[in-house]
Length: 71
Image (cartoon, rainbow, N blue to C red; front, side, top):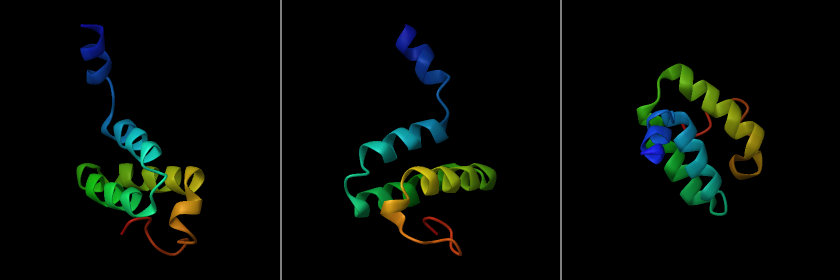
């Protein structure tokens, strides 16, 4: 049951990051997944995720320095 233990210790934010990395080839899909999954995160987690997206996928979202990443 090692796989189940690994899933239990996996945060929603980490799960979302993995999904976003996998769909980063398609801008529309990336933004759709980001918007859909933000509903599950706290405001603090959303801020951390926004910073991660800006750091790792800025080419997808463009210049949104004055706007939330997927708001």
